[in-house]
Length: 131
Image (cartoon, rainbow, N blue to C red; front, top):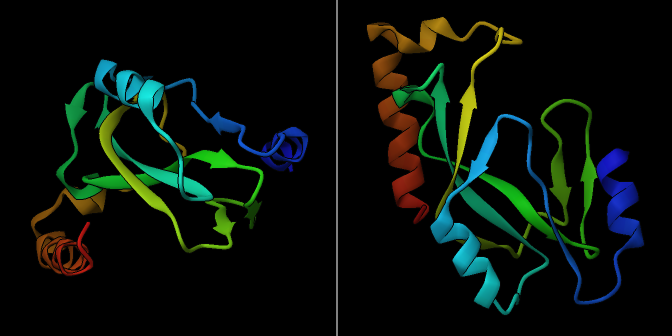
């Protein structure tokens, strides 16, 4: 509801770049956005996920819909999604996401050897989808 309230106030051609407290925009992303002429209702931006400053293989690469216009709305409760889902653009300049505090959920099993085949399958799907 909070994000949608901001979107409802946007005029045509205006955009919001959402940023969480534990995220940092790269200089390349900032420069790219300064010259971007948006064509899509929203853009998913590459996010590099760290936990306490350490790269997490199982959580990367990740794309999150962070640059949005008033042509979309967030739906769902936790890990909401955008409607309509397509079309959308992709921006490869990254946002660095570093979770330094207590983790809201434990995903430690994803760092185990048992998760590697699942991780490989998920990443192969991303490659086939062109991400």
